[in-house]
Amino acid sequence: MVTLSVYLDGSFWVGVLEIVEEGELRATRITFGAEPTDPELYEYLMRHGLALLAQASAAPPVPAGSRGGGRVNPKRAAKLAARAAARVSSRSTAAQEAMRLELESRKQEATGDRKDRREALARHKREVAHRKRAERRRGR
Figure 1: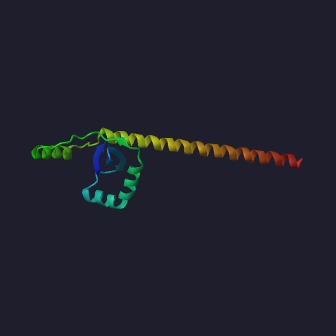
Figure 2 (figure 1 turned 180 degrees about the vertical axis):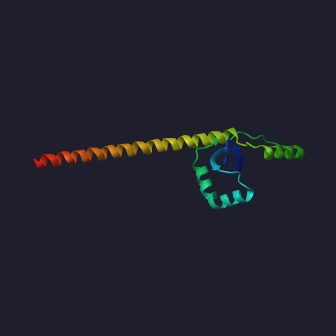
Figure 3 (figure 1 turned 90 degrees about the vertical axis):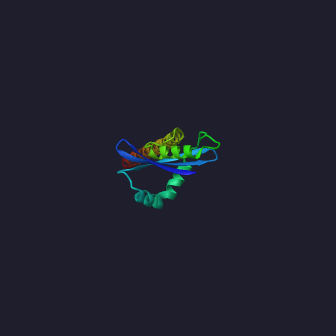
Protein backbone atom coordinates (compact mmCIF):
# COMPACT_ATOMS: atom_id res chain seq x y z
CA MET A 1 0.00 0.00 0.00
CA VAL A 2 1.36 3.43 -0.98
CA THR A 3 0.22 6.63 0.74
CA LEU A 4 1.20 10.26 0.28
CA SER A 5 0.58 12.61 3.21
CA VAL A 6 1.03 16.37 2.85
CA TYR A 7 1.40 18.59 5.92
CA LEU A 8 2.82 21.96 6.99
CA ASP A 9 6.23 21.63 8.63
CA GLY A 10 7.22 25.05 9.89
CA SER A 11 7.24 27.31 6.84
CA PHE A 12 7.28 24.60 4.14
CA TRP A 13 4.73 22.08 2.95
CA VAL A 14 6.14 18.57 3.10
CA GLY A 15 4.93 15.32 1.59
CA VAL A 16 5.73 11.89 3.00
CA LEU A 17 5.47 8.95 0.63
CA GLU A 18 5.05 5.69 2.58
CA ILE A 19 5.23 2.19 1.12
CA VAL A 20 3.99 -0.66 3.31
CA GLU A 21 4.80 -4.17 2.02
CA GLU A 22 4.96 -7.46 3.89
CA GLY A 23 4.99 -5.80 7.31
CA GLU A 24 7.79 -3.38 6.41
CA LEU A 25 7.46 0.37 5.95
CA ARG A 26 9.70 2.47 3.72
CA ALA A 27 9.31 6.24 3.43
CA THR A 28 10.75 9.25 1.67
CA ARG A 29 10.19 12.97 2.13
CA ILE A 30 9.37 15.61 -0.49
CA THR A 31 9.58 19.33 0.29
CA PHE A 32 7.17 21.64 -1.47
CA GLY A 33 7.38 25.43 -1.24
CA ALA A 34 3.86 26.81 -1.09
CA GLU A 35 0.80 24.70 -0.35
CA PRO A 36 0.29 22.40 -3.34
CA THR A 37 -3.20 22.10 -4.78
CA ASP A 38 -4.66 18.75 -5.81
CA PRO A 39 -3.93 19.33 -9.54
CA GLU A 40 -0.36 20.36 -8.71
CA LEU A 41 0.13 17.20 -6.62
CA TYR A 42 -1.29 15.09 -9.43
CA GLU A 43 1.05 16.71 -11.97
CA TYR A 44 4.03 16.33 -9.61
CA LEU A 45 3.26 12.63 -9.09
CA MET A 46 2.85 12.08 -12.84
CA ARG A 47 6.28 13.66 -13.50
CA HIS A 48 8.27 12.40 -10.52
CA GLY A 49 6.23 9.46 -9.25
CA LEU A 50 8.52 6.68 -10.47
CA ALA A 51 11.62 8.40 -9.08
CA LEU A 52 9.87 8.88 -5.72
CA LEU A 53 8.82 5.23 -5.60
CA ALA A 54 12.38 4.17 -6.43
CA GLN A 55 13.77 6.48 -3.74
CA ALA A 56 11.31 5.16 -1.16
CA SER A 57 12.01 1.55 -2.18
CA ALA A 58 15.74 2.16 -1.69
CA ALA A 59 15.16 3.49 1.83
CA PRO A 60 15.92 1.12 4.70
CA PRO A 61 12.84 -0.80 5.90
CA VAL A 62 11.30 -0.35 9.31
CA PRO A 63 8.86 -2.85 10.82
CA ALA A 64 5.37 -1.46 10.33
CA GLY A 65 3.33 -1.31 13.50
CA SER A 66 0.24 -3.43 13.67
CA ARG A 67 -2.66 -1.25 12.69
CA GLY A 68 -5.31 -3.26 14.46
CA GLY A 69 -7.09 -6.04 12.73
CA GLY A 70 -10.54 -7.43 12.82
CA ARG A 71 -13.89 -6.07 11.86
CA VAL A 72 -14.75 -2.43 12.53
CA ASN A 73 -18.19 -0.90 12.74
CA PRO A 74 -18.83 1.05 9.48
CA LYS A 75 -19.82 4.21 11.35
CA ARG A 76 -16.65 4.01 13.43
CA ALA A 77 -14.56 3.40 10.30
CA ALA A 78 -16.10 6.49 8.66
CA LYS A 79 -15.38 8.54 11.79
CA LEU A 80 -11.76 7.35 11.90
CA ALA A 81 -11.32 8.07 8.19
CA ALA A 82 -12.69 11.60 8.64
CA ARG A 83 -10.33 12.19 11.57
CA ALA A 84 -7.35 10.93 9.57
CA ALA A 85 -8.25 13.17 6.63
CA ALA A 86 -8.65 16.20 8.90
CA ARG A 87 -5.39 15.60 10.70
CA VAL A 88 -2.66 17.92 9.41
CA SER A 89 0.35 15.94 10.52
CA SER A 90 -0.24 12.34 9.55
CA ARG A 91 3.31 11.05 9.81
CA SER A 92 3.49 7.82 11.69
CA THR A 93 6.38 7.07 13.97
CA ALA A 94 7.41 4.24 11.65
CA ALA A 95 7.56 6.70 8.73
CA GLN A 96 9.62 9.09 10.83
CA GLU A 97 12.01 6.26 11.67
CA ALA A 98 12.32 5.25 8.01
CA MET A 99 13.06 8.83 6.97
CA ARG A 100 15.65 9.18 9.74
CA LEU A 101 17.41 5.99 8.64
CA GLU A 102 17.40 7.16 5.01
CA LEU A 103 18.88 10.53 6.03
CA GLU A 104 21.59 8.83 8.08
CA SER A 105 22.54 6.52 5.19
CA ARG A 106 22.78 9.53 2.85
CA LYS A 107 24.98 11.33 5.40
CA GLN A 108 27.32 8.34 5.61
CA GLU A 109 27.57 8.18 1.81
CA ALA A 110 28.35 11.90 1.61
CA THR A 111 30.98 11.57 4.35
CA GLY A 112 32.68 8.73 2.47
CA ASP A 113 32.58 10.68 -0.80
CA ARG A 114 34.13 13.76 0.86
CA LYS A 115 36.88 11.62 2.39
CA ASP A 116 37.67 10.03 -0.99
CA ARG A 117 37.84 13.45 -2.70
CA ARG A 118 40.08 14.84 0.06
CA GLU A 119 42.45 11.85 -0.19
CA ALA A 120 42.58 12.13 -4.00
CA LEU A 121 43.44 15.83 -3.75
CA ALA A 122 46.19 15.14 -1.20
CA ARG A 123 47.59 12.37 -3.42
CA HIS A 124 47.57 14.72 -6.43
CA LYS A 125 49.36 17.47 -4.46
CA ARG A 126 52.04 14.99 -3.34
CA GLU A 127 52.59 13.85 -6.94
CA VAL A 128 52.88 17.43 -8.19
CA ALA A 129 55.35 18.31 -5.42
CA HIS A 130 57.39 15.18 -6.18
CA ARG A 131 57.53 16.05 -9.91
CA LYS A 132 58.59 19.63 -9.17
CA ARG A 133 61.30 18.42 -6.80
CA ALA A 134 62.59 15.98 -9.42
CA GLU A 135 62.65 18.68 -12.13
CA ARG A 136 64.57 21.07 -9.87
CA ARG A 137 67.20 18.39 -9.22
CA ARG A 138 67.55 17.63 -12.93
CA GLY A 139 68.08 21.35 -13.69
CA ARG A 140 71.18 21.58 -11.48
